[in-house]
Amino acid sequence: MRKWILAVAALVAVVGPGTGAVWMNSQPSQAADTIVKVDSEKFDPAEITVAPGASITWQNTDQGGVHTAKADDGSFDTGYIDPGGSSKPIAMSKAGSFPYTCELHPYKKGTVKVQ
Ligand SMILES: [Cu+2]
Image 1 (spheres, rainbow, N blue to C red):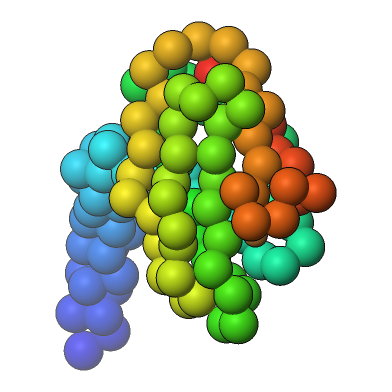
Image 2 (image 1 turned 180 degrees about the vertical axis):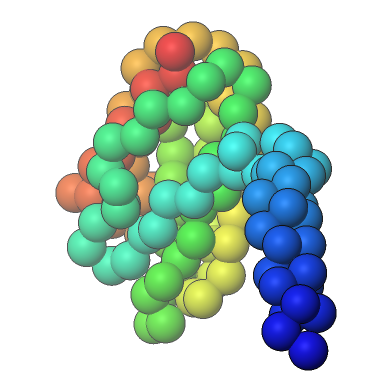
């Protein structure tokens, strides 16, 4: 009985880490999904850095209002994001620093850095 338990423990020890590695290797695309939260007062995080080609999704955590994320230079615009909803993933293809605001609440400022 004790031998049997030891055999199972050894098997778990061998298989466990390997399984973890396989799981990690099967998730490479997840790293490209970056989420910025937006509510009535701020973008969170207000400044974010992503690699060229990565996508950002804005998530409206404000249950009471519509918000947007619109680049000052017009390079991206989420359009209206419903309360509790999310924008489409927006691909950041061009390198640079892109300040943006909420079209409806221009005092909210954020920056996307692509590098
Ligand atoms: Cu807003």
